[in-house]
Length: 351
Ligand code: FAD
Ligand code: NAP
Image 1 (tube, rainbow, N blue to C red):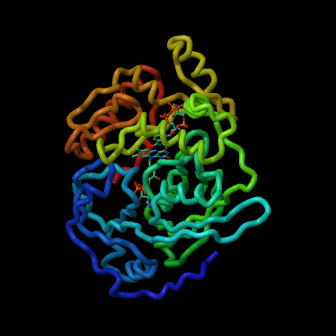
Image 2: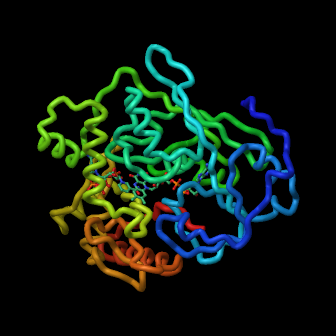
Image 3: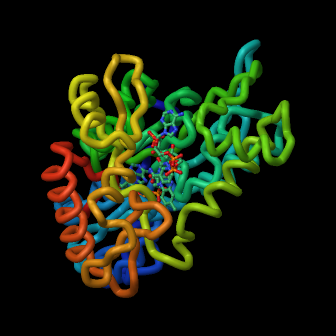
């Protein structure tokens, strides 16, 4: 469905920057250089780019907070940094508050703002780095909640047709750390804003042991959404490297899902195997545990390393290149495959 955006092109809106360093714009801290760079502050810029033949020919990288990207040293592309701002409550009905935020808004600040307004539902997703616009791309998830659980719709600029389209949940094909934007619509659709349906009838989601334990230790028996958020912020700060201090992109691999039979035969050989039953009868294995058992926790390859507190996170030990990060990831994958017979899929996006 087309939306009400004004799509008139404005030529003066596309004054590009050239040979721009992206080192401070990606949380791994890779010293990448972009040939063409444009901060996008309004929709008309996207239309103007689409109407410029020389620019439409260039490969495109849509950049949010750079917290799920592994960059090459040289990015011969047009980098569009999403800076669209704004957030508001659109409407409410008996069940939900419908709250919208623009693509360039910071995700965690938005979560904090909703909690401050008294709207619950995003608390388990506290402290995830990045922007609103990137959140649907990998259907961000943590502590038993994914964005698809609270998603209503989004608006995106379609570089192929030049139109702004409204996409509902079905159109996004959300899956585990995946969506249509990571697949065939990658770099074609620019997400402009996202609307969330935040439930009026709220129930805490406390299935993850760390969260329940933290609340128990804090003697909080009936947590509200702010308590859950506080717990998750504290747990994450203790466990995950702060990208401002150690470059990283969070979990580097998805947790693999295996059949009940494969899990059984692995359990016979490795009684400590960490696994979680899925609704379809398969089992999700903790990729971090597999990597640790393969001996990679705390090890380095060149300037890329495996975080000592959580083996699922690859880190920049100083001046790591994209090639070094790829090489480390490939070695880990190969070792886990040969030891456990399990393939690890990479989570972040390479460019
Ligand atoms: P970027 O890294 O800039 O981009 C990611 C992808 O989205 C790219 O392919 C980019 O082209 C595309 N993209 C960005 N903006 C748009 C747009 N407006 N329209 C279309 N495409 C776009 N992820 C989780 O799911 N759960 C976690 O718990 C989690 N924890 C993390 C913890 C740490 C310490 C770090 C560093 C990362 C973590 N991540 C987590 C990964 C990351 O934060 C998320 O994937 C986040 O949504 C990425 O946002 P970003 O703005 O930085 O996206
Ligand atoms: P954890 O709590 O040590 O658990 C290890 C893994 O087991 C997690 O990856 C999680 O899978 C799974 N798990 C744990 N409890 C579960 C339960 N009750 N039901 C189903 N699965 C369960 O993990 P962690 O590394 O500290 O991370 C905590 C949460 O933050 C996880 O949800 C994780 O995905 C998220 N996180 C994501 C990123 C990222 O970049 N994607 C980075 C940091 C943290 P899931 O990953 O499927 O939830």
